[in-house]
Length: 308
Image (tube, rainbow, N blue to C red):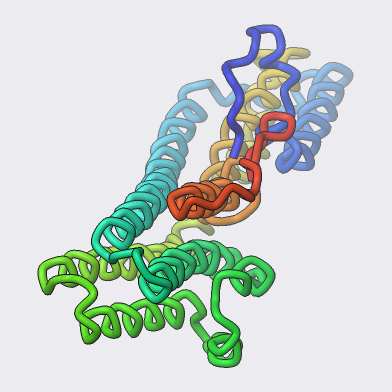
């Protein structure tokens, strides 16, 4: 995710990190070359392309803008919902850790080990959710926080974060049977586990349910057709300004279209997608610090304005 301050007005025109231009420059180049060729033909052979009037393309542009605006809003809602869910995960992880450390006595080795196990599994869950959403192997990040006896079952699980959540539920049941905390506290802890499970399920819903393909295809086709038809209708009235005008319009429409695609899947590693690595690292640092550990990993800092 891009986490820079608003650049200087002059630098806005040259900022590429986080910009959509690197992804749409082939389309921009195509429209610019086509517009230039049509302008040259019109210059050397006048009246090659009749004057169609601006009204037709204005109406088409308004209709296309509505389609792109609707899709962009739908994609942004998915992105924002995903960010709210990860904010909820941070809240649940900190709350569960506070409850574990506050209500389980640490005056003996068994109590301290129980606290550590629950907190470490919470950290492992956060890392596992990130890797599941990004389709990357989670073992390097979660093995240090899961006891060796559970490694085989974790490797065999098809849904690793769900498997870790079941381990946390099992340990919570052991805490109840051993009478380490009251029934009310157990219920509160279980509510935190349920909330974390809801976060996982909601993130999987967003990840596995894209916007309808037919709608995306309609917007793609309409955008290409409009930008390719545009220079034929403008060249008679704009002359040599046609390539510039068409390039700016193509940048707007193709940019909105591509940005919507990027925001539609908020869990990836693209510049405008969510910084899940930084969020899961924050959870790890906060929870290990709550345990009193001092050998903590460093915060993930932005590199050239990009936070992974």
